[in-house]
Length: 225
Image (cartoon, rainbow, N blue to C red; front, top):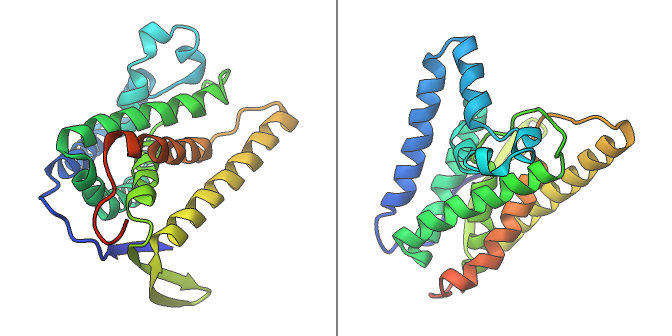
């Protein structure tokens, strides 16, 4: 399912959300300009590498934040920025501009930290804004559960567009992340190997962190609460 827009009107211009989107796009542009060797050096220095992080958290702790601005490809950054654009503005309305920035960075670090903890001996880098954006989705789930999300739904060879309640769209998204995270973690335990790919537990933990922090940082308001 691909979100297209929500029916919640923004109270103020979400300039912090747009700055975050532009920062991610700019960093991705810089990645695109680098050679393979330079890109590898960039990832090694700024991504979360669990085995390095837990060998010296004081030295590598900053990567919990910086990794959220790195992406692996066009689909990775495109899907992340789409979700951030659709849901981030309303969350910024609910929290306020500066609280939203603090919230975004915090849930991103918590999500990356959770994923790294569950693969503490891995040398595979963790990158992407997905964990932070999952926190935004969790916060949106708290503030606007009855909002409607215009959604593009591919069904085999057909595509349809429907309005779906936010609690259903985001609830299903969270369930899928949790199921996939559990399956991936089980595979790691059975095979005794660290597996790359999507950081499912960063998504799930980010979502839960967003829901927990939402009432502490803002209040529900409007007819969608």
